[in-house]
Length: 164
Image (cartoon, rainbow, N blue to C red; front, side, top):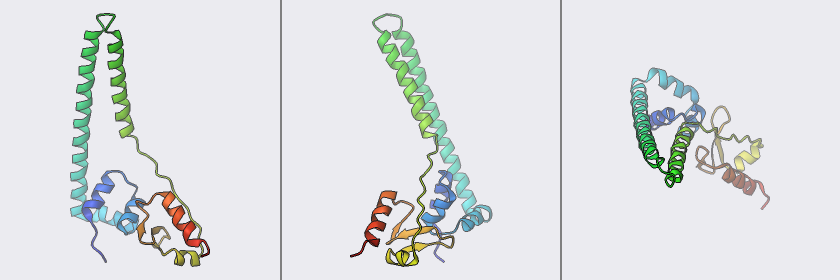
């Protein structure tokens, strides 16, 4: 059995990548990942370390955005004292709102689309498809599914099943 890249595994899990996708990307089963998460002290420590680093990064980012917000609010108050500066005050307010919106977007998880294929055994062989025990596709013609856009999968399948 090939050695598992625990560093990569820990980082992917901490980033919130679904376990099924992590399994596909690393070429191991979800069950093996679950087992490692509970039994492998080295992996457990790495996950904790990366979670700490991620939390530290988010705290610094929050503090930075809050400082920008305070600076813009102070400047808005200064500018709003005269009517000529009212447009600049409104502009500063919009920048604050934009920064908050960007922060909210960065914290919103994005659902990844799923691709379901129903292929004959002949098509699977012709397209050089490799699957795990649950019949999840790991690769097509040597290209991993974890990073392949659905458009590329469609093109490979269409080209591979066309009569030549």
